[in-house]
Image (cartoon, rainbow over all chains, first blue to last red):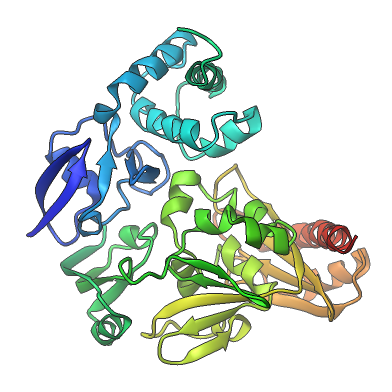
Length: 156
Length: 260
């Protein structure tokens, strides 16, 4: 077992990990239940977290590589999650909801990187977040609504 | 899933190289594919603390550290301004932004995947790989070699060519059925075919830079293709001339635009 120290949602944490553990495994062990593994093939986006401010797939990040880094999950972004979750609910984009935390983490990364994203840019940025229920149209509407809200154009 | 007994954050390239000489060791780069390979190794060697994630623009070339992510390359303004914007276009269909932020250019190229969009584009651009012990090796040679225990540290892309890429996929973000990268330079038009499904290879060089459909048909006839669960050999042979035509037309147009 290895000892790994990193910042999780603004708090310094120390976790024990096996040499072949992923960040995803460590986060679940720490009780972070928003992070899910949906595919086992590094494809679905459900395990998305922010590492040093950038959206990454926690299933592919070797746990020892997190030493000294900052990790943020949806649990650490409650205010933003509430606003974005409201947009998703309003547009009927929530069905089974399993993919939502990973999608939301990537949308929040998009909002920082390209707050004025076009429809094409939204689709391209979120292509790695798979949803088997929605067909994506309602999600796109919700994302556009959230980006506009975040930019202060629309008041919730 | 991959299984390791020890995980070493290498402090120097020499340390990583020494550890990697044992068959029981493996280098971990982006870990996107490696994690799924079911490998059982004694030691995993991590290169992420060695400063190999930089992209440097020199007067005559770009030097990309092997741990730079595909997303770093795809969004690098200098790289995209120089080669007809080919990196943004070529890498965008690869899974998703989070995946490309993890996948590294060195891991992609060392592995020489038979489905690689990355290899096809780099081959079209006179790329050289830098290996820790062997030094610089032309990518066209490296593509034909067996995996060895040296460490790929950098990728060097000389300036001077304009490129374009076309691919066909069963669905967006899937592995490609076929990739064609084309480039034009002082020696004319070069065409590369990847995901045949086999390692990418140069199929034509020094051609006149024009959209010669008959020539592309002839190239497809003499190129080796294979079948897998995504497509048959026959399908790939039929699609190849179309991709070559589109890639050639696009890179010739991009070249003219850059010169204008």
